Amino acid sequence: MLKLVGALLLTAGASALGLCAAGQLRDRVKTLRSLVGGLEVLGRELSFRRTAMPELMERTARQAGAPARYLFARCRDHLEELGERTFGQIWTQAVEEEPELLLAEPERAILRELGQVLGRYDADDQLAALERAERELTACLARAEEDRRRLSRVYAALGVGSGAMLAILLL
Image 1 (cartoon, one colour):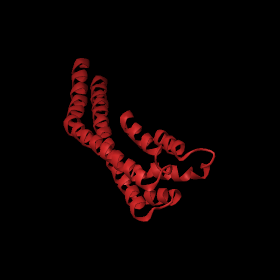
Image 2 (cartoon, rainbow, N blue to C red; image 1 turned 90 degrees about the horizontal axis):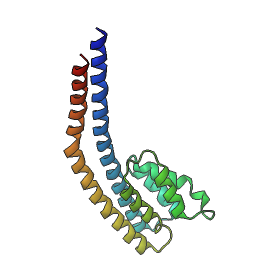
Image 3 (spheres, rainbow, N blue to C red; image 1 turned 90 degrees about the vertical axis):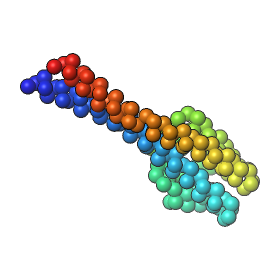
Image 4 (cartoon, one colour; image 1 turned 180 degrees about the vertical axis):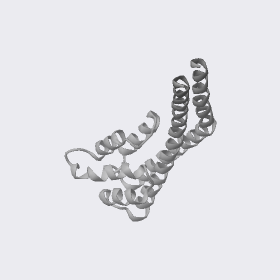
């Protein structure tokens, strides 16, 4: 009886690992989608209203979807440090420290590069940098969606299959 319970627990644990890996792929797609949407909001605000940086971060934090809104809120919360630190440093810190953002290094690099332009150059240069970052993140999103489509079932099946195989070996 104890072996059966152990086998069931092993199968459940391995299945959970596979499903968790599949869930991370789904969450990464959600993160990239919300970031692209947040950059669209930033672009609209800069283009039509020429909004100042504190208000820009506030509006974007309210309008962007989760988890991107946490990035913009974290930036907004540290804007009182402007003068001691540049906006690029504040932005980079927010990108690196936001735990909800499931980003690979190339995507973080895109955002860090964008932060070096925002608030530093004229509106046209900022808009060009935003469009470039949005384009690059959209390409990353397409790759992440393909990975999710291709690998989600594989991870789930590997988790269930490996758990069942280990359970059989134990019995």
